[in-house]
Length: 133
Image (spheres, rainbow, N blue to C red):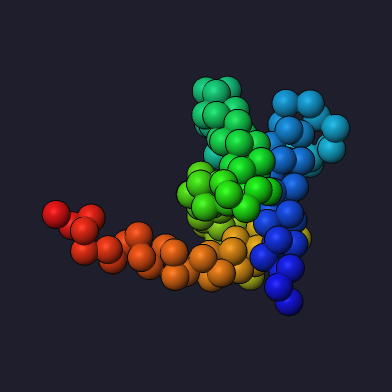
């Protein structure tokens, strides 16, 4: 049980490293969404602008940082908005209230677990009276 946060961090970090790197090296074929569907239109908007490339660089950086205990919180801060966007994509564009995509489900569960493990550190940061001036 004491190694569960390390296992969660390993899974989360490797998922983001693999899928982030796959964007640039194309070693895992990713099927295209159906033509004219909301996911296809969304990808058509962010792919050619370079926005998705920047997100993938952040995924690689955040995934690498999450792997190490000393930089895990920084990695979670980088990956947090990306995880929220993955969930928003699933709910609003894929029209799936239930997350049925295994990588998305694993990303969500491991991120929530790591945030839960760090809840006291996060709480001290958010509610420290010295930071309020």
